[in-house]
Amino acid sequence: MSGSDETAITVTLRVNRFTPRPERDRGDRGSRAGRGGSPFGKRGGSPFAASSASRVRRARGKSWTQDYVLTVAPDATVLDCLLAVKRTMDPTLAFRYSCGHGMCGSDAVAINGTPTLLCTASVKEWAKADRTTLTDDDGFRRTDAGLVDGEDRRDDDDRLDDGDLGVIELSPLPGFPVQRDLIIDIDPMLDQIRRLEPYLQADGALARTSEGKIDVFEYLQNPEQLAKYEMLSNCIACGVCEGSCPVFAGGDAFIGPAALIAASRFVNDSRDAATDRRLEMIDTADGVAACQSVRACSRQCPRGIDVGEEMWQIVAKVKER
Ligand code: SF4
Ligand code: FES
Image (cartoon, rainbow, N blue to C red; front, top):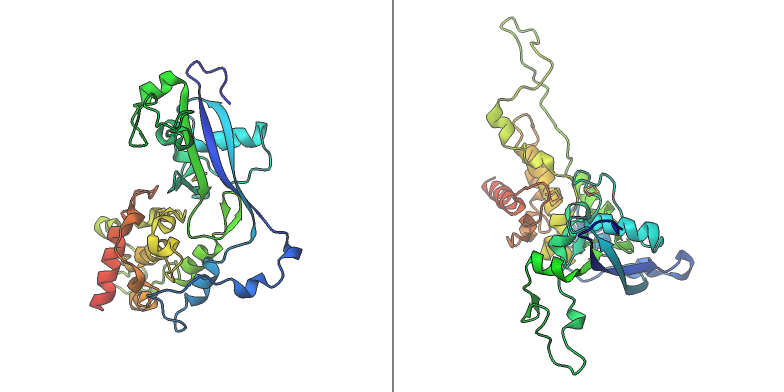
């Protein structure tokens, strides 16, 4: 990839790959798709019940793990590496991306088991020791690779001096049906966001002059009112918070943090007149009641939203109703 770079080092991408079974071989798979039920979600009575069932559907096909060894610049992103693999080593590898700089949210995957974006993850930051080489030929644990209790404790400089950064494990975002390799089906998440009507529903009352004439054709807000939802409007629906949530990713019936963030964005908007209905829509067993306040959803949000705190706030608003 960056063979001419003086500081280039090697890294192994260990990719969990998946090829779905061809459509004609699948038989009646669709009717048996459900996986488990929710201890929190009641059957029926919720607009999210159907989408929760389809969200956890698992496609059938062939799964395997594939290693790609590359020479890279330490500051390269994991997306750079995958593009290099696709162009020069294996054109069959499937992954999704668009903007390449953290704006579109299309490239969320699990890196070393942690949901994050491919385009903002640097190789240097995520590479770790290869656990498959922890023992020597005689079966004893190696002590010459900076490994302590199986963890890579070398600092960045040591690893760069070694010329081998180690391994980066890539798998699809948890909690979503896998379509191929690292590509997941995000339609269930988008359906859940759409059901909560993510658009402004104002009451139509525009500012008027003292004579009763319309003053401005806008719904005015002051900076304090804007600050209440501005951060929330930065959500790019990447699904990282959903993949991090043990309830959502565990397959239980839950509308998920991304949909609740979309609802919260309008609940906190002073111009919106549909707050009561919005809170009612999420006051279900698989709505806010399914949130277990684990707060794992906050850890990797690429837009810096404290998702767990927002969940807490909107749960409080539902309870206060
Ligand atoms: S809240 Fe953050 S992590 Fe969740 S979908 Fe939006 S941008 Fe992604
Ligand atoms: S490719 Fe757009 S956010 Fe990563």
